[in-house]
Length: 322
Image 1 (cartoon, one colour):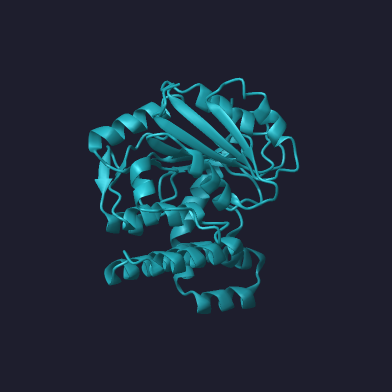
Image 2 (tube, rainbow, N blue to C red):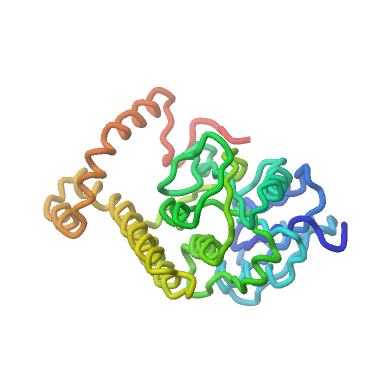
């Protein structure tokens, strides 16, 4: 391995024993071989460390272990402190990436001369059902590669895992915020943009995001609080102009409405009229979401029924992934 690898892959891990082997294998299978992978075990209580140790014969992989659980932000910051790569790629322990991802995104970033690049994420349920493919909450996939202004990124509300130029990251003093245990990656992405990072998207999904019950993707109540904390942090940044502050607040309101919608839909479905009215009075935008989501919900239900697939059932009819 060269003295400075092309990419440092940073991976925080907590009780990820069933998944981290696939994560590591996906990095070892990369067409770009000049990488290092820095795994920080955040005081797991399962066999995460033991699984990672099986791969330490590959000298490109390094393992660190926290004595106590510090949260994903501190785990990532610890990895960043020792990372040597020209580019930083974030990869969570229960996710995996396509073999060509690192090579394609680095080449794309160099060609575009930008500081941050990303691709859409493929959201998988536990047993391989494709839930969605997206790079942001409020932006469609473009037809081809394109650059985005800071204002466009704020409106889009990105959810992708980026690759960032290490020198830019370090020069701007950007770190994950320890106070955020959810939405910390969202806050970091936007902080990079607010501090001048030029962003381009390659609309080729190569990051596989595993959705599991009781994770940040499925805990809507926790997400509302986390998004508020992330918003407050971003508003305090000196680079946040009044115009961008307005955009951030507007985007947060939209995220808040969508986060509250499952509660409202459940109240409507179960006939809890008083609760539905309370939520609707508090957040009138919920009615618009209900009216516009019914056709797509019916279509999705019919599609699943034809294939006998329920994305949240406990036991899948067959193994779809792998």
